[in-house]
Length: 281
Image (cartoon, rainbow, N blue to C red; front, side):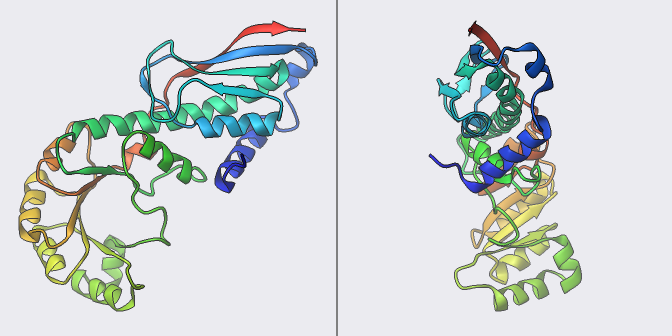
């Protein structure tokens, strides 16, 4: 199966910076014909993501390298769990190791942190969504990892949604002017979201017909007042500085979306390792 272009490019770039023209250590220490079998093992609890990236690393390193996944994206892992088995030439296994683990650890970290946020809002209507605060070149992969953790994707880029933020408001003269300009020029069927910072702005945006109103950096009290003033006339999104210890207080206000930049810009990597178990001439 052919990988999507974004995955292929990301893996090629990662291999170029790590493998370059070849593994010098393996070339001088490891016989060319030596075979090896290895396991990818979880060393900490978490949620797995990035298996497609690992498979693409194997494909680009050596088409004969075999990766047998025992777990898939979205599966929970415990310390000691075997995620996959890898079999092929020892040099290929070693060339595969670090790049594959980098993808798996980073993306599984995103999925793990997302699951923690999702669990905190269980039983409410709120959906946990990501942002554009992603690692350059890895946006599609990180957003897939958010989905593996049970979260939802916000817009992918500037091209697929209208979201009027603080700098747009500054240069257009405020909520009313920005909304009117957006409504006049928006493509048919495009939803318009606008960022507000006070309950008064939230009410104004609802009166002017915004589809989604982002309550930016508000306290739970201000966000609750804003939800009441909007009164169901638009979807509501809380954004800005939401943490694991505060997300529940926002979710219980009845908001529709809670966006969390930390899912992709601050997720700790999940600890995984590759261990060679057997080698053969």
